[in-house]
Length: 207
Image (spheres, rainbow, N blue to C red):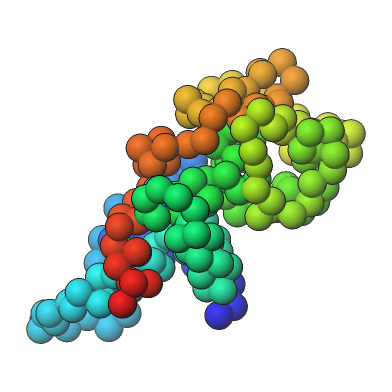
């Protein structure tokens, strides 16, 4: 399945929940708040939603929240099953430890799509080395910083003004002077605050 390129506000309306795909704009001009009904043709007749449809909906919400393709998501689930512990919690940790998500959580980008673009443009260093793959898995004690090219960009000047006002989760630490971050520990599911239920996703793949 190809990556979704359409209006992202339609996704929030489709799922009836904020996926925060536009960063700060989701707080100011939210399409879901202006038009709460799902997109498409509307009918007065209500359909009964099956359990399978609910499970699919939760899986799709997770995919679109982190910007992951179906094949990628299946690999994350397979890895979560392979690891010891609760599968749903393992899945959340794998998604949260993606490099693009860490950039977003550190407040160095307004949204995950923007963080993905920053990484692909070669603006980010991971442990002093250039990292241009958004799906790179970070580890505890890894350090995320800016490349020389990134520091010379106009975007870096914007981040210098806006990053300090953004709250960083407890499993990360940010140096406001150098705009670098460190991974203190593996995130817990409660730290993620995701708009989907990982247990329902496990049920979807366990059929």
